[in-house]
Image 1 (cartoon, rainbow, N blue to C red):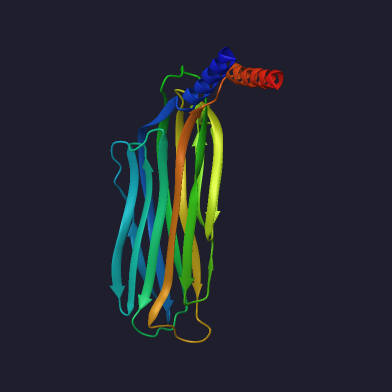
Image 2 (cartoon, one colour):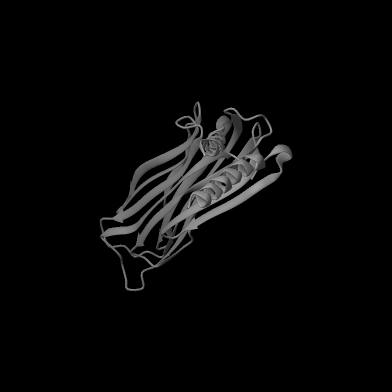
Length: 266
């Protein structure tokens, strides 16, 4: 009986070790993007926003932008970011996109139309490094997380869902996987694909949203808030080894022997 338990323990230990047998290293990356909010009044258009600055460094790819502007009665505040962090925990790479925007007026305004647009693109190359597995060993890459958005407007409007997209390419620029996370409120997502230790993954990550604003049919709007929008998509890219068939065979054999021994004792 002790031998059976020992065999089962070794099989379980083998499965556990294989689960932590690889991590990511960031080879290169870049970010670009912008935010634009515009409002039209009596054929006069007022625009706010700006571009993301690429603040990437060792182990991280980061684009960030934000600011505050006032034109006439209108005040606009915005911030936007797109981050890949492979430095804090190389086995679980954080990919995070966030944005907030508000548009306020200190006087009643007759708004004809308007729009709010956010976009950002990240390109990053990640290599799957070994923590004990041989080069070419099979691994499973998983991307999982949460998405939350809030939106309110004093004007009529039509909003498309805030989204995070990801295209993963491998050797020869061949597409391995494509994912899209759209959300109007709160969602949970999880995707996975297979790769190998030593492979370089080319990530193309997109983040954005669009809202079309119309006039208030009841007349002028304000003073107060005209538009309030925020979004946070927070995910983790993880890697784990795929257990070999013989490891599963050892585990099943051990379970079978324990079951057989239990029946005999009964």
